[in-house]
Image (cartoon, rainbow, N blue to C red; front, side, top):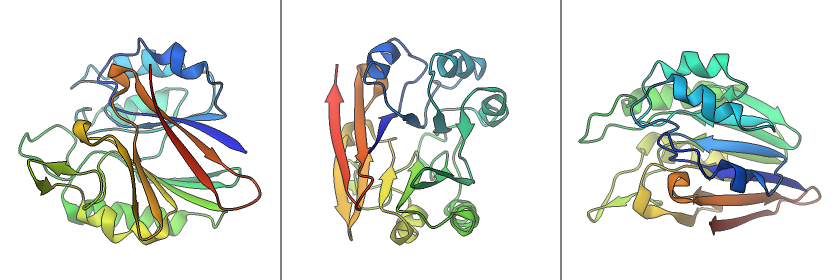
Length: 213
């Protein structure tokens, strides 16, 4: 079994990290918004506190320059790339589709589509296929004022994955299913919310537990 700590939406606040890491996960995934519109250097301090393998994508509230900072950190940036960890093949897409707030790291759907297409082509075939995104797919955990605001491009590529780790919509913490694909938003790490995900080693079985401090 592989145990994964999933956090997101820290917005520059890392006060709960020690408590999250007390679960002794095999690895950590961060689904964006490490900072709150910067400074990007604060991400280095946050990520330096994580002493297990850590994989991250930026969120829409992270300046685009954070991609350079992530390359200097002890974490692995998944934005636009794919890698294999044990029985997990993981691809990543950071930022979000456009919002009314015009945040620093927003991408047109055509660019999200192109980035995901390249990342999926680079994925190995493993037991589990995981997408780490900041934006949710359209139609799952993406309701704002009665409207679905998730990414159409992420939804388009959903069939390539068993699990999608997302965030972005603070009010939509939860676990959803679309066509057999599990989508999870762990909530706001800044508020002590997180998720523990367990991948069974012998069969295709994903267990998601939403937790709060």
